Length: 260
Image (cartoon, rainbow, N blue to C red; front, side, top):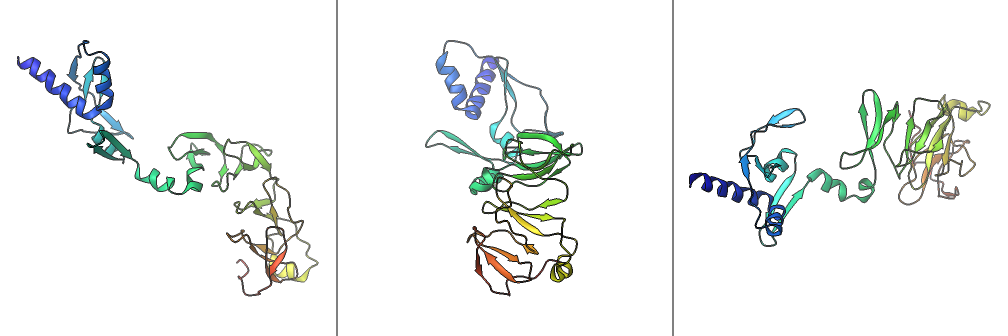
């Protein structure tokens, strides 16, 4: 009688923890006996052993762990909605990212054995580590440097090299469909360029095809802002703003200082 009571107690515990999953099993085969045992398994999370307050149980050769405790160990919020008979599990970090759609639809760089790759917001490896340099994604593109001279430039979210960049060109992130590229080629006959450009080289803007979209060079150039304009310094030293067609739309001379 005592043994039967223990089995019923364990079954009740598991039903509370796993809810819908076990209810489905029981209703689908209510004549099949369930054999439940307290398991003597040890649980490690990121190499650290975690001790649960509630028992881990094996039923018909399947192991069940306390859902709430496991979720909390993994940094998740676990709630029971008794009115609607639902278990709600939220990852606070994922919720924060999900609230920003542009962040939700991107990848994040990570390092492994000296090489860089990319993971999604769930932590799944999407692009295996193979880069010596890996910048963050912006508008679906990221600058990388691989193990060969040919693998240098912007990749897409699938890891394909879509905008090759040769040595001597130094990229910025994409914004409003354009990215600034620093060129290591100055015409030092221009006194202003020589004085203020230094060894940084001229700036150009490229589009998502890699083309110099405006056919212009600048002493300095900042990213396009939400209003569709970018702050630049022309080769004659004039500080202006241009629109997404390369037209000068603001000639105010106080917009920003030259970079150090």
